[in-house]
Amino acid sequence: MAQRAGGYRIVVLSILILAYTFNFLDRQILGILAGPIKQELGLTDSQLGLMGGLAFALFYTGLGIPIAWLADRWSRTWIMTGALALWSGFTALCGLAGGFWQLFLCRMGVGVGEAGGVAPAYSLISDYFPKEQRARALAAYSFGIPVGSALGILFGGLIAHAIDWRAAFVAVGLAGVALAPIFRLVVKEPPRGGMDSASAAQAPVVRAPAPASAGGLAVLLAKPAFWLISLGAAASSVCGYGVAFWLPSFFERSLGMSLVDRSVFLGAMTLVGGVAGVWLGGWLGDRLGKARPAYYLLVPAVAFLIALPCFLLAIQAKSLVLAFVLFLIPTGLNLVWLGPVITAVQHLVPASQRSVASACFLFVNNLIGLGLGTWFFGAVSDALTPRFGAEALRYAIYSGLGFYVVAAALFTLAAQGLGRDWVE
Image 1: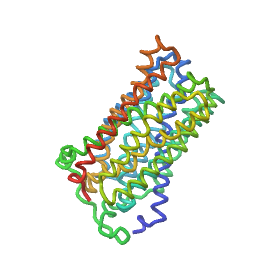
Image 2: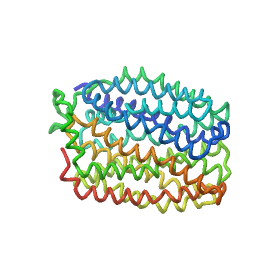
Image 3: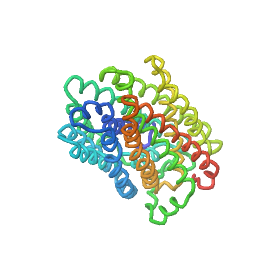
Image 4: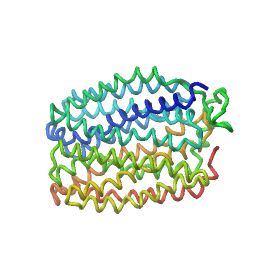
């Protein structure tokens, strides 16, 4: 009971958010540093896109499922501690890279570490918070995405301006290594499924249910809702990850902003818009999802359809003030899906299988969304450069916004049959 008391679980959630912040700080810092890295190492946009996406996604997605399988059987807190230290260490090593392949391999190492950083956290949160608070708790955890991305943009740009891009990688990497032992001391392993009893306030401590079996995984993969949700999230992530990675370069090339100016501008936009969007999605998911599970997917579907025209208008803006306001809206709407969709995935399986279910979802989402997103925009930019020059990246971003329509359609289809696959 002490491990699930209100005050302590807020502490646990806070340090999980902090770890996730470092996860995205280390993941997204490459975007703001793309300019100086490209100049020093002589890289193309396609190569930068591969490092920002495929290099990370290969091992991040491939190792996520076996690590999650282990997390459903062993200590999730120890797995996350090791993962945090590993991905942070490889982030620091990125600062020592002397060419494309060295940096590519270091980014693969970051992906290896981060493979154990998210799915176990989803499972831990589901065992610390009752189901009526779960979407908000998972949304709060997802604050690590905009906060980490914003800090990566801000600190990465400022450190690179003051020293160089190598120092930025080393500084943020070593900070994450220092956090790992603190994480292990604070976060305790809760009983699995202890918050899924009838009364969350008086839930007894229960024995951990039997761990997921191959048969249980087969049941998950046979559910149409799982594939529609995963592919819908992946479609949105192609655009979400791609735009987030390339916006710093867009502001440099099309609006002529300096490294420091775009670090502050994009950092503020990502923080304010992202936190608002994540919380809005969690709040709407808990409020509407109680009446009908389908709303966990319909809310983000509507958000994507609103975000698309906002992005189109924002990319055409010439004024920085107008651009900030116009980008702020879709930046928030782009992250509305996190709390509701992750909650829906948790309810496709029993408590004993949540880590593996989350990892399967992340496998599809990140292999397609992260692996393809940053490369897609970079490759289109390279292809259009002979015709449009410095403006090629603007048209590359235009070309990718249609993925939001695909995401909205898949979420709407998944919502129709979600009730059949729902597990309380």
